[in-house]
Length: 302
Image 1 (cartoon, rainbow, N blue to C red):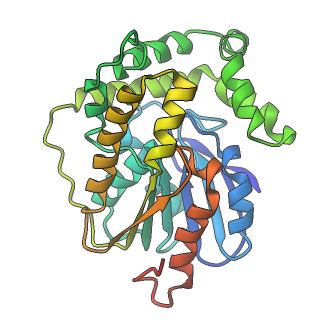
Image 2: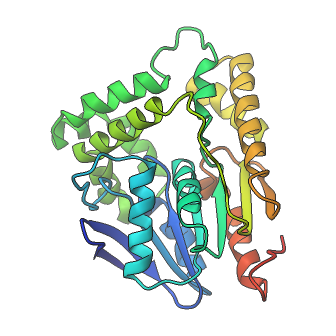
């Protein structure tokens, strides 16, 4: 099921199973493909499913080029070409969704459909404009500095430093995947890739980024604002007013994604926060099946 696929300048760690129309899943910024395996196993009963760790993550090589959405989109195109895939359904969660938006602009004729799962937007920097009392470590700049620090640590030091994070992620997955999760988060190379990706994001702020999205059928899945606000208050210690302000901006950005072309549908992941693939995977399954069940694959029926 898992393999290293040579895309020319690097190897990517890929999980694949099933037959039929191809679904390719790009996980979020710090999301191992093992998080997606339970859903992918179900999807593989009626489709060919591929999920992969982008460059620098898991067992995927980082490569020599500085990491950003353009490089990740280039890698995705190389993977599609290498595996000789035609008209795949592309699914991207969070930062993975931003990569797909970049991919769509540069390769408008390649995908047969897009599913953007609570996807990051080019204007996500607006979230940093919310003032959170006593919180300085949650900004994009602070996260970049943290990644730079982590990139300089050894694997053993990272295991100790990120023990709580590792434990939290492991609790959401079967014990058979715990070792893989620990290895994923204790990888200094991943944090170097993250630092480069975040730095690129900061450099692009304020620029007029063209968003010429192709007329490809697209489903935008958005998290439940009530659930998200509750999670920010309970898990991150934000005040309700702060969480509401952040969530209002996020929901506006998700709503903007539904306007990228005239063939975009919206699907609410009711009762789910940002991690829709873990909290409400059936919503993603429904979106994907709507493409598979549509005879023409042009008008997914939700």
